[in-house]
Image 1 (cartoon, rainbow, N blue to C red):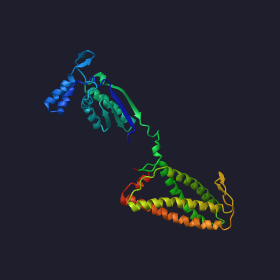
Image 2: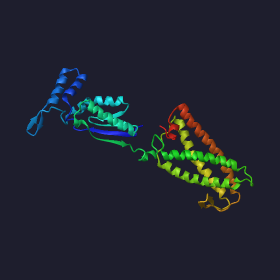
Image 3: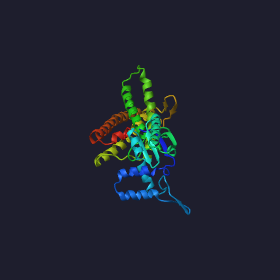
Length: 324
């Protein structure tokens, strides 16, 4: 990947192209004598300056339609030389850039241009008028498109939230299984539920942001055949339903006694409902069923992603991990 570019221009290029050398290059590619004679006349035509005229001995007519083409032919050996050095040059007439992978390579490219100019007998006016070794600032200017979804790919925000929630929810599921077997004398009897509750609340806040972000962003085109697209869309929507119900039921368990939830040691999230007998058990049962059902959906979702990647060989999984 290119990170530096040499930007150069040849001073007075069109005015100083040697016509004899240019004709020699044209004769290597053109065998039609009449066409070569016409090009010779083109290079020798008089230049009008007011009511006076003069015959140029160097250069090509400025502004003429053939001048850029002749300039490109004359500098084609420079193109070949830079290519032989393993570098990429983009050029039109006397303006060109050379794409480089480091500052060292850019300095080397500039020296190659200078050496080629000298070795081919160019006039002093052909020396590079200006040059710049410029670092491409793609790492210092973060394009907003990297953050947003497009019709073809997910943005950084969607990808990050997706994988962060996947890892965290699976961890929360494992912690929940661990908690149910704790006895009163276990060290983690009180701290594990507190951690579970606090992370659950953070996930709920993140889920609300994720949902808001989702409806404000375009959804990349779903890949697959017709029925697969319908199932994929349904599974995506059911993921949100399961996550909201799972986290709300967890909140209702923790606030069943009418007290709020202390989010770590930062602040308390108040209970929205008063204390109610039996709510903790009912919400706990619903929470448990939803947790297992959601893990089943996660496995189904992962299986579909692997199917797209290894069998269909499309971009479904790759674009969800930010690869093209």
